[in-house]
Length: 283
Ligand code: GUN
Figure 1 (cartoon, rainbow, N blue to C red):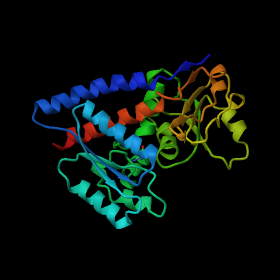
Figure 2 (tube, rainbow, N blue to C red):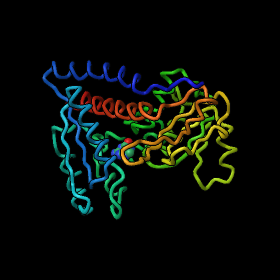
Figure 3 (cartoon, rainbow, N blue to C red):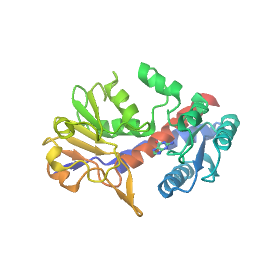
C-alpha cells in the first residue's frame, strides 16, 4: 500500500514559515499585496481564485480581485492587466487560466510586468527557467518538486515521466525537473495522448506526474512497482474533483497523491511564496 504524498501537511508547514515573513514585513510598516484577474464564470476557476484570496486573508496578505465578464474583449483584459501593473498596492498578480475561447492567452500573459508575474508564466520568466537563472517559478511545477523533496522521494538521476505538456504544468515542470538544481536533475520524458508507446514509456518511470486532466488515466498496469505517482490534472464531475490517478495505483506505487490535499495546496503555497518574495524585493 502506497504512502500518501501529503500536500496539505507540507503546504501548512510552508505557510507557517511564510506567515512569519509577512509578519516581519508588517512589523516594518510594509505589506504584501496579491492581485487576481478572473474572466468569465468557469466554476472551478472561480473556486481556485476564491481559495487564493482566502489564503491571503488568512496570512495577513492584502488581495485585490478583478472579475471581468465572459465576453470581455482582449483589450478589456489587457487594460485590467495594465491596471495591476501600475497599482502600487499589488506586488504580484495572476490572470487565472484558461481564458475564454477566442482570447489570445499569450498576448495577455506578455503584458504582465515580469517582476509582478506571480505565476512565472511571462516569456521572460519562462526564459529564465530555460536558462536556469533565478526568477519566479510556475506554482504547480515548483509545488510538485517541493512535495517530492519533502517526502524524500528520489528524483535526482531518476526517470521522471510527465504526462501532458500544458503551459501551467507539463511544459515548465519538464524544464524544472531536468535542470541542475537540488531535487531535480532528472531524466525527463514528456508524453501525451498521441504518443504510440505511451503505456510502455510510463511503465519505465521511477516517478510519474500526470497533468493531463483525464480522470483515471494512470492505471495500476502502467505503473512500475515502487514508483512515485503524482496527480496534477484537474477535471470535475459536477463539484467533485477527479484525479488522473486510478485508485488501484495505491496497490502498486510506493508513493501516491491523494485525490484531495496533494498538489492543490502546494500550488497555493507556492503562489504565496512568490508574492511574499516579490514584496520583500520591492518595498
Ligand atoms: N489555472 C490552472 N492552474 C493555473 C495556474 O497555476 N495559474 C493560473 N494563472 N491559472 C491556472
